[in-house]
Length: 156
Image 1: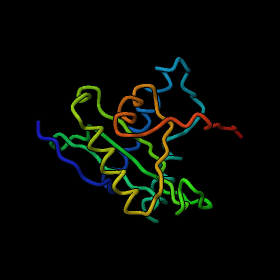
Image 2 (image 1 turned 180 degrees about the horizontal axis):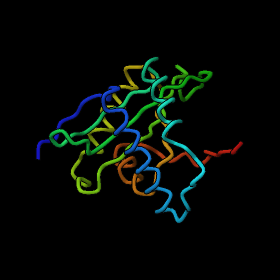
Image 3 (image 1 turned 90 degrees about the horizontal axis):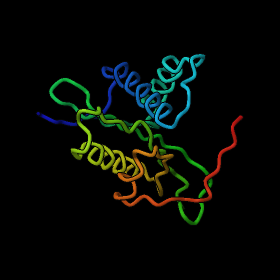
């Protein structure tokens, strides 16, 4: 096994998108939900990543075993009015954390997480947020993430 890491470029984007859809599908199924068949995530994700990779508001690190992508990470950068907990107003929104099942529990996700958190620091973010899957809670808690019991969502 020869694990290496590199930043996502347009060259890997199609594979990255497919892995993101695999991740989302896995999360839906493991939570007992039915995967929607009327949503074209492929086109929506391609549009999102094209725009946000270009303007620097999305960054991803990938893990490789040789030429094969085995893990992904992602960080979107957003800005909101500054507040006491985040005086810069810049936030990192963590997403796309996925490791191929054959490579789990080997420290790959932790390394990918560390790399995108460092990107958030470099961008000037004062905090990183994530909506964690059940599988990811242990990783994020061990890294130092804390639960925010007040997080709520309103679907439009």
